[in-house]
Image (cartoon, rainbow, N blue to C red; front, side, top):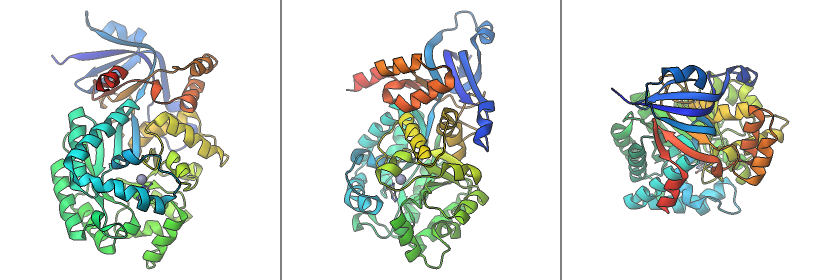
Length: 441
Ligand code: GUN
Ligand code: ZN
């Protein structure tokens, strides 16, 4: 008999994808005293304690998280693992920042030992911040991706990642030929795509570092592997957009460079999308492509303000990305707090319900993983995070002053950080709690 895990506590999730923020409250579920049953990494049921307790077998152990708030594991829809070691680099905007800080750091990932060490560190950062799934950039080196997938496999995490493809406008030590890029990417896909919970994303860095010949190779790979993901940057910074227009004058704007090579689609995720033309939003919608909104990165690099309202109006799927190391935290609560402020600067009020949707089911939808993760529906994979709603004196004061779950969630995303992550579960197993941090230290 497979064994059942029973968890008691308060639960919050969004039970169905929505197309307008106004629909969210009707799909939000809050169970103050709930019982979650898991079996072999899957969710069996979530119900009230009152209804569920009678179904428990005699002697069934119960993990008691009363006083905590349990939400689906956070989904980080855009992040660079090799940039962990250069987070918080001073002074530059995108193009200078890449040259001055990013490329030199990424040069180290040809070394399997370095890549393995940083992969372990990176995944530990994700889990200790409650993030259970991410869409991740490696470097141009296949070794970087082998190391990351191996480490994620060891933890049982659901992860999508890929090797950067890049053949121009970067230092020689990081560029490759289109043929090399094609061959190495193909080998990685064969090795890792659809292996357990791992999936592969074709990862051309962005249009300026991609020649037409390289983009043609990406197109061929997408055609050869129709269920593969595509992950890149789009329209992040005004100088970058001008550069793309100069490099590809025959194309009708930045997104059209990717669209021309058939790189838009249901499993395509474009990070940033700050300076899009109206027609580009329409193209994202028509091709069912998704967007990653990365507020801390956009503020830190001075890239601009993402138009969340337009994204809803254009009915484009959206996830939240931390974009470490241009982003300044791995923590999704802090990232949601910054997303709220980006909204405020544009007279858009992002309610907590919306914020937690983007970080969970919405993010899963953006990655086309909503049939596997994102909420507590029976049959989904059991990835979740146990939040302590109030850990500091200030949080305790403010939390005691909160009238309902909406206000509690909002205070959590405004004042919260990694201290609020009580523990993280992946695939039905406890994989991180603060004691493991102390042991590791
Ligand atoms: N555009 C191209 N490469 C990068 C990168 O590494 N980070 C960010 N934020 N934007 C990019
Ligand atoms: Zn990025």
